[in-house]
Length: 232
Ligand SMILES: C[S@@+](CC[C@H](N)C(=O)[O-])C[C@H]1O[C@@H](n2cnc3c(N)ncnc32)[C@H](O)[C@@H]1O
Image 1: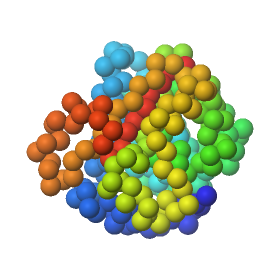
Image 2: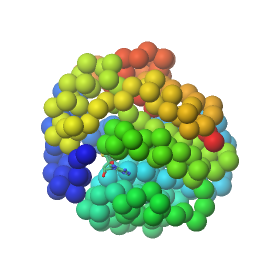
Image 3: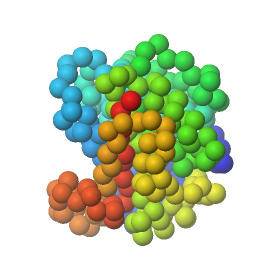
């Protein structure tokens, strides 16, 4: 598998180059995911209590700014197996006092004081060896609060542009895209409940005026990415 320690210094540059065809900058996609997730979360849960949020495979910490923006009362734990990514993520988010960044090498090393209301994975699972997928999903389920939500975002192999970008991306070399159906099956196999899937990111920037229509297209398997959610 790819060692992200080698990509920390030019991760953003490579990513920007890779998604150039969409017309968007990486931050657009980072924010889109958190906005989508928070809309769904707060539709299901009206609560003023502090949200415990786990960003699993946080990389260089590009989502934390949006997690803080869309979840006002939140305590974030961000973990990754790449030590250099964690160090960069820490430096990048130094202004936030509500984030605990943790490096780990094996799941068994991860210990959390409490369960999470939200567990979030953004384009991480395809970087984890296939033989560890079920273990990882099962471990994450065990870290979910009884009323918590698990959200996993992945590239959609059915979208031609996404597929092209994936196969030309240096840090996706040797990885396989994972279909929504495979993820749903794995979530079922690991005992998740209330599993739902939605497709997102249908339009490039050139067609930005169509973006408000995206929320009606979630069932079409043509979006650039998809997300799957589940509960314990
Ligand atoms: C494409 S990056 C995505 C980073 C971040 N989620 C984002 O959206 O910017 C994939 C990340 O998954 C991490 N990763 C790979 N294998 C992992 C594992 N077994 N457990 C946790 N993170 C892992 C990598 O180190 C890398 O930071």
